[in-house]
Image (cartoon, rainbow, N blue to C red; front, side):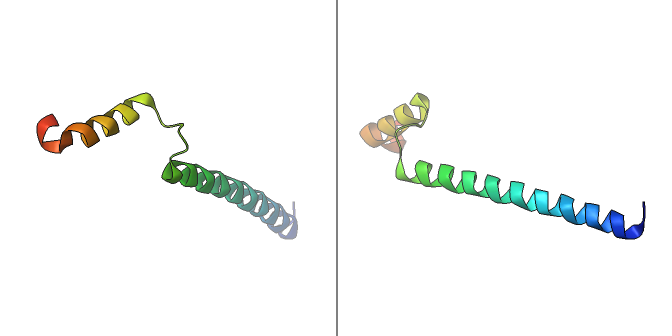
Length: 62
């Protein structure tokens, strides 16, 4: 395999990785947005903790 072929293969690999990275970034941005907006899909333990904190405050739970 010539150097030119190796460079072309590396270029293709880099483009594939960039595509995968962009896809993952998009998924993470959507997940973060959903989390920040409170989409109602958070786990029940987290919801219970938040309810207890809002009801009793941090001093009484500590």
